[in-house]
Image 1 (cartoon, rainbow, N blue to C red):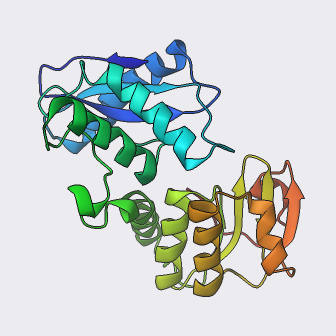
Image 2 (cartoon, one colour):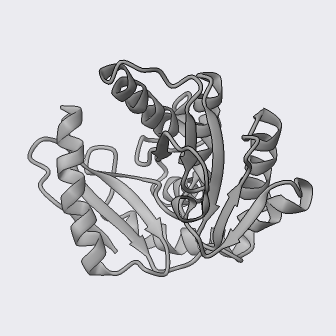
Length: 245
């Protein structure tokens, strides 16, 4: 699916989601919500959203590539640098964006800014992968300032373990916070000692390269506790200052 709303200000802009829960109704809602989100940027953009109920989990790189190519074969008629500029979302990361862009380039013979979130090697923006997670922490930092406090020393529960959570953790560690949890759709891991750079590096490998589940983190770091089918705020016991993203 691809849902497009008003383009009076500029091209449609919104993510692509690959997840079993995707249907036309959800995408219509998310696309409408995207209009409001985009308006806050003050940039000339309309709203859009797209995706499929295809589930990348458990699929090989070749299977994901073939699906992305088939998806773009249909989508390429409706998108373009000045028409509609999709981005990534749940289930659509730099790998999927790369496959989609490759097929668009092959079909249209154009190397243009038709997708955001590309790898920097083929036209992506510097620190684009970090942007969402860093931005969430900068927002938290401003909230702390507004309440006459700082992030340093705060106990933080992170929900998720994908791109946003990984780089939110990276920035939180740089600012001196203590990150205590990560999660995915199967459960939550808790490290009462706090995650450090070494553990974060392994988490990135586990999720981005191995495409594993958060429960597998315990195989290398047995000191963490895994809670199946639990959210971070449901299983952590102790002082908590912030829950994000």
